[in-house]
Amino acid sequence: MKILSISVLQAPSSGASSLLSSANDLSSFSFYQRGSVGEFVTFFSKTVAERTQPGQRQSVQENNYTAHVFNRGELAAVLITDQEYPVRPAFSLLAKVLDDFVAKVPQDSWNNPSSISFPELATYLSNYQDPRQADGIMRVQQELDETKIVLHKTIESVLQRGERLDTLVDRSTHLSTQSKMFYKTTRKQNSCCVVM
Image 1 (cartoon, rainbow, N blue to C red):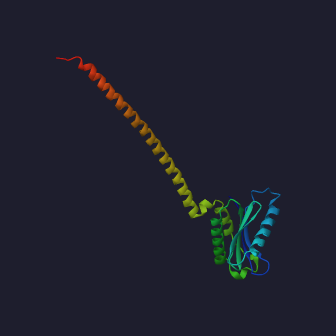
Image 2 (cartoon, rainbow, N blue to C red):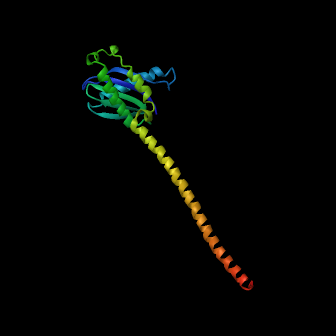
Image 3 (tube, rainbow, N blue to C red):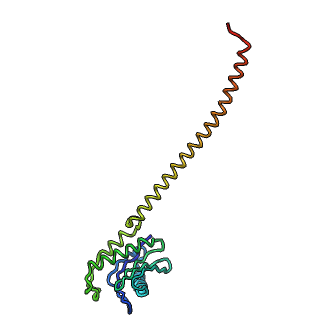
């Protein structure tokens, strides 16, 4: 699971979108590919932001990557991940990014994207690389899964103990019949001789 890019775009209802701020992690690509991949990420982000209706969320797959888009009207956030990245934490991250961006970047600076400084995107990019650590519900789900595994192991060991107990009970029943037979034979043998 990997995040390649987080972008915030101005997405008017008609016309082209413009990139306001972005953070990329292209370290998985070779040095010579990073420029081309970066251009593709920007193009892909702009395209999906323009084609997402205001107030909607959508996920668009392209080859091995998925673009998760949240368009809030004037602003849209795009998260480009590999296909393994879960949808719920992706949209949760996009909502946080848009809330932070609106709170920290004044709307009058949106017309001049070069003047916008929003370093929080890089922090989000690194913190959300592992969605289980960043997302509370996924973390709880992982703990539940681990507990379920331990519980299954405990139940299996109890069942194995139960099977062992069943074998012991069977053996004791077998021993009990043998001891009854031993008692009868000893009684027969001892009845012939009377001790005075």
